[in-house]
Length: 306
Image (cartoon, rainbow, N blue to C red):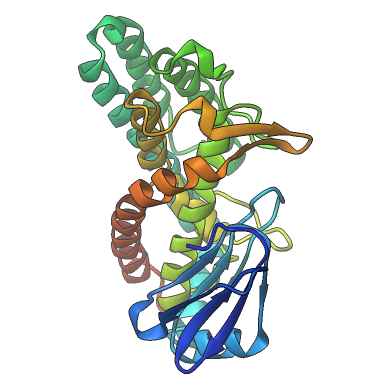
């Protein structure tokens, strides 16, 4: 993870070479890297990009203050037949609807699991958290054969509003968390959620790419230019893991309001907070990626044959 500003990243002698404006150099052998994430402004040489790709090391340029991220991945696995099966599933309205239901069901199940854990962790809020759990269960049970994809998206939106309203109870009032606000993030909690989701998105994009699927063809999320809809679908199943981590980090003061600053483009994580943020979220991202890889394999097994 590269989070310092204005570094020059080059390839020298089989290693990633980091050079700052004062000429200080740090070298990391490519053999010790499984991915490179650049979270701040940096200059990346074309030769380094070639070497990373040749060694199967994904490169993710995270959003930072921007709305977009970029990724350069190792050669894809799978084959063309697998992608044709994926397209056939998308063209089948019933099959696509089935997969979309699974996405929404998984998202709501993750929210209920998080609320249950928080109710046990903070008994004083057990009643309102339990009430939200019951409401989410009822909402999930309303999925039926006539529920179209647009209806499912609406249900997911309703569930998220209830869930984030309950999540506010767990966080110190000084953090001023108003509920989910994405663009721009308005407070330290939303800034942490956005950065965590960006990193999660990059990991799942790697998983999808290695499996040989087309990341742009999902079920719940519509096709859209530049949108990896399948990745967005898979992220839904792991969002609650990031949300639970963020709540825990602020309650345990691993992350604090002083780790963030307010800018014209929203609230951002400062240098003092990057160390604890990236060090503690990394094991979680690895677990999320492993679970997502298993989901992708199950998805492949359920794709229609040609």
